Amino acid sequence: MPNLKSAVITAVSNYLPDEKLTNADLEKMVDTSDEWIMTRVGIKERRILTDKTKGASYLATQAVLRLLEKSGVAPESIEGIILATNTADYHFPTTSSIVAYNTGCKNAFTFDLSSACPSWLYALETGANYIRTGRYKRLIVVATEKMSAAIDKTDRSTLPLFGDGSGAALLESSDEEGIGVMDAMFRTDGVGKEHLIMHAGGSAKPANEQTVANHEHFVFQDGQHVFKYAIRGMVDCCSKIMKRNNLTESDINWVVPHQANLRIIDMVASLLKVDPSKVMINIEKYGNTSSATIPICLAEWENKLKKGDKLILTSFGAGYTWGAVYLVWGYDGDKK
Image (tube, rainbow, N blue to C red):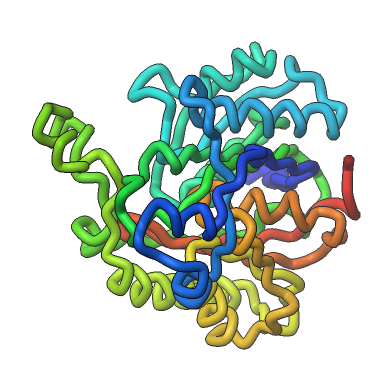
């Protein structure tokens, strides 16, 4: 069997809309308070794409353009774009095809990947497998979410949680061993179906006047049920992937968790026995951007990352589906 190529992240970027929706703003919209939101989820503000004519593809386009500019890579050299999203512009065409067109990546294959909040981790491992074969050398893995389009503005339980944003990574082939996407583990349990769901708009329940009147085209979440399963699932996958790769908590430089709830993040770090200073957290500023939270974090912490740093990425979402990726960072510092 030929030696497999290493699939290495060589640049990252993110894009957050300028408009902020603060807890003070929410107090004027629904029955909530800054204290209630901060105590339960740890979010102070979130970014919102207010232009109703623009969807998730706009956010991804900006992130990819930034990625191409900072890396100095020609868009024509991109061989594929794998786009993670749960808030696609349309049922079809794919959001990834729109992003490829908008960014000049005219030689890229594209497809969308949807597996709730862990979607970008699935996309990262999928892209890594394309590269490991030796058939592809340069891909973009991007996550993008316009969650504000999927949230009921009258629902005090979900309105404070979500924000809009996008994050992207350049994934390239390398002959160097011991760096890049090293391992991944994913799990799914259909027990979560009714606890985190958008009830209408798909083929099982197409849109009609009644579904619109009943607000069934927005996210429904049973927060307590999700909370319990999220901690259990993320800790389990992280522990198993660390054991499989002979890693202890002291070996890990960074844990990059899905930014859904600060209490979940703290519990996961505590149960993994990882020092809180090694955990990337920006939920206070951006809220839950679903599949985009992890690449947004990586771009924000880029200047602190060093070649050889060992990272554990982990996420949990609807389905339920969850997982972890073991990643060895491929370069030093910021490529701005």
